[in-house]
Length: 389
Image 1 (spheres, one colour):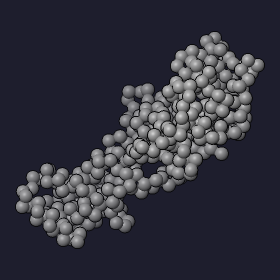
Image 2 (image 1 turned 180 degrees about the vertical axis):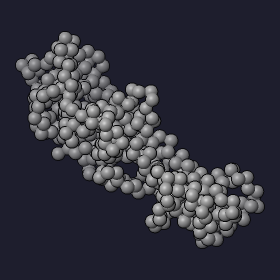
Image 3 (image 1 turned 90 degrees about the horizontal axis):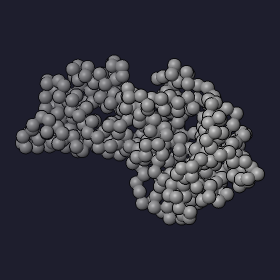
Image 4 (image 1 turned 60 degrees about the vertical axis):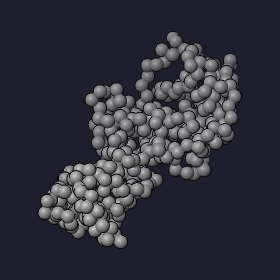
C-alpha cells in the first residue's frame, strides 16, 4: 500500500499551523467544469475501440486499491499523460503518440502514475490537495516569499516521486516502470532500463534534484530502485541544508540550529558574558532567554541529525552546504566579538568551538574580518590547539 512521503506529512503539518485560514479555505473536493471542454476539444477513448487502455487502467486501479470510474481522453501534442481531478471520477489525458509507443504493461505503469495523484489528493480528507492548491496559488504571486517558492518546488518533486511509486505498484516490475518513464521522456520506442539504472549509480543524487516540477528522470529511476529496496530516497527532494535556498521546513530548522548554536557558544568558557548572552538570545524565535544547550556542539562537517517535524518520520541526517557552514562561521564570529571585554580569551574560545564543530573555514573568515597579523593569528591558533589537545 502506498503511503505519502515524509516531506508531504511535514509540509502539511507546517502549512496547517502557519496558514490555517488559507489552507482551510482551499479544502474541498475537485472542481467540476472541465468536462465540457474535454468533450469539445479532445477525443474520448471508449472501451470497444481501445480495449488495451481499459485493461491497463483496470489493472492499475486494482493494484492501487482505487475504486473510481476512469475516463480517458486523447489530444495532440508532445507525448505525455496527465491526471485531471474531477468529481466522482478520474480523468486521464493522453497527449501525442504516447499510446503508440507503450505496451500494455508500460501503459499500466503510466496510468498507475496518474491515478496515484488521485490517491494523494483524496488522502487526509483532501488535506494534501488543499496544500497543493495553496502552494500553486503562492507560486503565481510575485509577493510570495522565497521559502514558499522553494516549498512549492520540493512539494512538486515529492508528489512526482509518490506518483512514480504508483506506477511501480501498478505494473509490479521495476524494469517496466523505468522503461515506461524512459519512453515518455525520450520519445524512444525502445529503451534499456538496466542501463539507465547503471547510469543513475554514477551520480551523487544526495545533493538533491535541480528540477523545477519533476526530478530528473535518472533520479526518478534511482528513487524507484531504492524505494523498492526499503531505502530512504527523500534526499532527492530535500538535498543538503542550504541557508541560501530554504523551504518552509528548512527555514524553521535553520532558526532552531542558529538558536541552539548561539546558546552553546554563550555557555562556553571565555564567552560566558552578559553581553554575549543577550546577543545570543536574539537568535531565538521569538527572542528570549537562552536555553541550556544539551550535549556537545554538533559536527557541521558531517551530515547533521535533524529532528522530525510535527510527527513526520525521522529524516536522514542532512549534509550542510558550504554557504550554511560559512553562515555558522559568521554567527560564531559575531558572538565572539560582541563583548570587547571577552578579548583574546573569547577569540581563543571561538577557535576551539570551530575545531570541535568542524567549521574549518572559521580561521580564515575571522582573520579576513579582524585583520590579524601573522604573529597574532599564530598565537591565537596555538592557544586554541592546546585546549583542543
